[in-house]
Amino acid sequence: MPGLVLASTSRYRAELLARLRLPFDTARPDVDERPLPGEAPGSLALRLAGAKAEAVSARRPDAVVIGSDQVASCDGQVLGKPGTHEAAIAQLQAMSGREAVFLTAVAVAGPDGATGHALDTTTVRFRPLGDDDIARYVEFEQPLDCAGSFKCEGLGIALFDAIDTRDPTALVGLPLIATARLLRARGFAIP
Image (tube, rainbow, N blue to C red):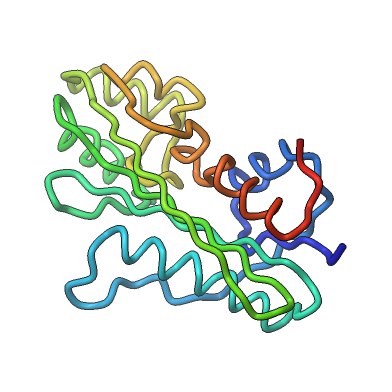
């Protein structure tokens, strides 16, 4: 089997991929993540996942490379990683009592030049959140590196009324059901 490389430096994605119990390396993809003019969130996620896989594949042509990207939106506005305490609070205030859609794409590129893709859609319904709830949550969990300003695998789960998804790992950043399917198609032994 060729080597396996995760085209990401995200610890969240690495932790998820480790669940499949396959040895892998990680590599920074160095891809411009800015959206193209008028690009829809799903198209953006798929394009960036593919670009990440292909960028690392160009440096590691002997390996199977996994790229992934997630684009979140609420009322048509794309939600990035907040980066600051204030931006996280503003994002959560804007999503209070609303739905946010998370589109998580995965691309698997191989030595043969072919790339397989998948896109997962997860809808999160936020409960009405008070300013004190939001401030307390952001202080406790510091979700500054997470699109949407929450960590559903942690205390962030308390912010929701519901999560509608086919794959709960997609919301964390790597849809493992689709990833496992794409890797099995490449000959990796995954139960």
